[in-house]
Image 1 (cartoon, helix red, strand yellow):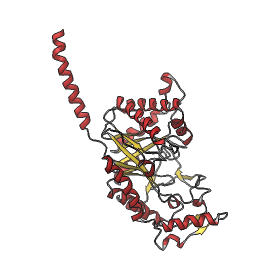
Image 2: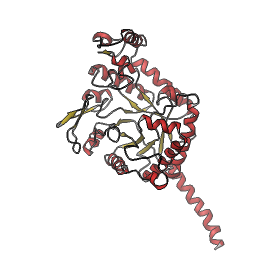
Image 3: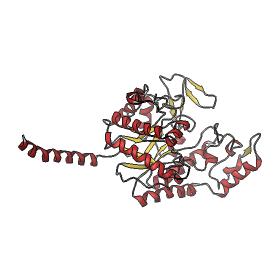
Length: 391
């Protein structure tokens, strides 16, 4: 027996080394051009996605989808103990979403996207932070058998950590999460963002982890006065975005102010200051490219790769030409810097597609499918062209 052990021990070590080498050499998802399937497994679930949607997404040239899911909506209870902590009643919905996208030939970003109150608890309460790590240990084990070249994990959408020492705190927590994922899914890509809402400014405060299967992500919505014009939620509703209408893009073109008007009840000083700043900062293709270059320089410094997992502009409050110009300029800046992207979003506030046939309209002005089981949608040809895709 001891002789067998002496022979088999080195042989087993060799097999493990070979397996590790194969895993280490596996291809990672390209994640060049994607779209966010928002409002499907989050918020009210008002934008259900069917196989026909996924086939159309692939057909027009997207290579991946980002699936934002609200863990609370799927049944996660961060206060649960033992086996109950892993018993999310809604997990089969997530399974179906992931597997449907994979079956459509798309890569998938699995995006842990809690609402703000739960995200705050993850960041501020030690016990909830530990439950968050355990949640990712469970999720990584659940999806470890999905192809590593087609599935990536994004542990937390838009970490905040604005307080002093926030970057260090987030780095500790994300290190714990990555370690938990690696125990279950060593070959899969993990996407990590910086602090301060996943902004470029927050990214620049981070020091990357030493893991070749980690990429870094950021979100881009600048200038917010334009991209979030008339957004029907706070803080935009009571901010300058809720005081004006008709703002155009780019800021140095005649269209910028040609249709500008104050809305009833606007604070004239606040509105004028915001518009003057927009013009003075010369928001155009060059200005956007300068922002993206800051993120790209950080990535080059640390020799890591970047993905912009959200960028977009509201559609109901912007003229189509201005919106398409912004989408084109943002997309071009990202691609020129070698940054993959996922536009926000597919069919809701920031959508590039709209429900057709039997539809309804929500109180906040979004068109939704009348039949959630059989949604029908049509892409906006101008949006696709702006994104470099085929209408």
